[in-house]
Length: 420
Image 1 (tube, rainbow, N blue to C red):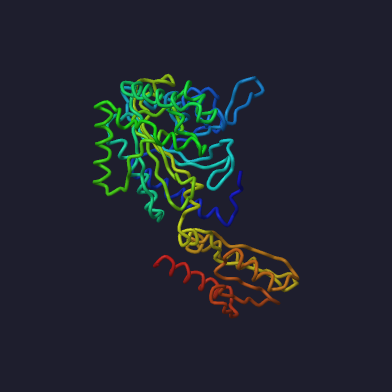
Image 2 (cartoon, rainbow, N blue to C red):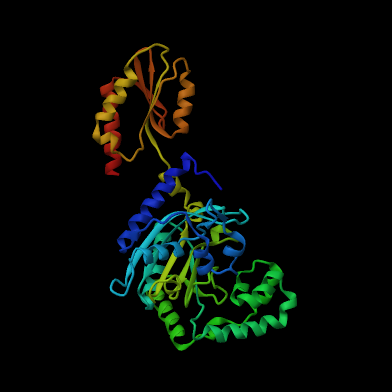
């Protein structure tokens, strides 16, 4: 699990702020659910044979012997909260909800994957038509576009419905049965417990056989096939780059019909930055009414790792003024500067995140200039023997100023930034 350090929190805050704004613009309202849930919420919805539940979930007994888990994903939690709080029912059938927050999975740490990771996602509840699927996929692509992510591509599939999936799984079982001895132990177990989960296998020797397995998109019923066709036709209208990938089933058992992933070539092997799909049976399965839904989640850690450098640099927090008193004697000049700035609403409301007051008597000015540079300060005010020297850290120029002179410089800086 990683710390997010001060030099990066500015980037995270800007990403989260934009996500909040975008999701709300499309009519989604934020919901915040607990990090802890009853383990059975996830075992019952995600599926016992998924890697998430069988290998990755953090679960434990609390002091009263209840089986508790750190949430490995948010959809089940959002649906549970929506049911319990009557956000969705036949008289109030549509709900558009979104979330941001940490998730937890015990998996091997690697690029873009940590055991505590962050996701943002949307859940479009109550709309059975392909329009909802398109809505979710388009918003995900808009989000990546807004963040300057180039070359992202949507991979889409259908895992069918209760009418057509059983026929496909029988075909798949026949195929797997013939090659069972060549597959890993996990795949052999999944063949008898949850056959679709063989597509989750990451073992190289299994991949060549899995790639030759029957394609589910060739065994869909008429309604599922039409649903998928409607989505792809709409994606063409939105000029979204996509590809049908029959091997995508996603690592969660609650999906029906649509599943999709958006991948970026900048992420290497673990290249999915976003994924989601339709889960028409989940709400009923968790005790609610028979209401369809579709959603998606985007990995914030992965998204931030591939942000263009110029965006990261622009979003890193920047200090307006660093103040240091190196005079070695008591005086009130630094307090006077601080007081005047605090009273100035224009300066205090600027995009810069603040003013650092430093009083390290006896420290050399070189120390403070180095510190101001680390903090990405625009200006540094060095107080020496009652005199104030204002240094432009970018231009490396310096001149003596009064407190009024410093305020004028800062006001002009903020004003110029506002015009830009």
